[in-house]
Each structure stands twice: as C-alpha cells, then as structure tokens.
Length: 98
Image 1 (cartoon, rainbow, N blue to C red):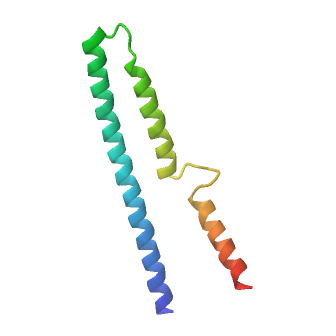
Image 2 (image 1 turned 90 degrees about the horizontal axis):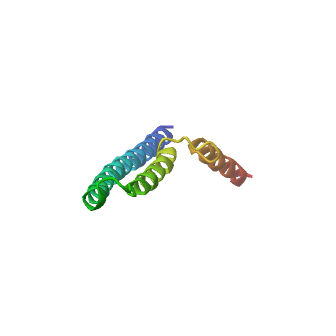
C-alpha cells in the first residue's frame, strides 16, 4: 500500500513539474512575442510613420500562435484535453488486465 502512495505522489509530482514547465514556456513565448511586436512596430513606424501599418499582420500571427498555445497549456481544448488523455490511459490499462 505504501508503494502505491509513493508511486501516486511521484506521478503527481511529475505531472506538476510538466505543467510548470509548460507554463514557463508559455510565459517566455508571450514575452518573446511582445518583444517581436515592439521591434516590428518600431521598424514600421521608422519606415513609413504608420501610413501602411503592416506590422498588424505580425500582431495577428503572434496573437493567433499565443491563443493556440494558451488553449493547450490551460486545458481549454474540449476535444482532446487532459481529461481525455487520462480516460484513454485508464481505458487501455483496463484492457491490458484481461
């Protein structure tokens, strides 16, 4: 029984560290995206002083990329989210018993 609790705690710890790693990478991606937008906006302003705001395409691309990553990190993916993975793992483990 003690082995099962230790194994359970270890798997919880591994899932928690994976989640923290995903969040850290998401925050880094947000920061890098913001820096990229600022650089491209500055170049756009320097070249034509907002007459042709082409940097908005970069804002759109970075925003879309961050939105997709946020859905994955925060588990907002309704079709194949974390619950789905856990259910499938349990289902396959139950099939192997017989």
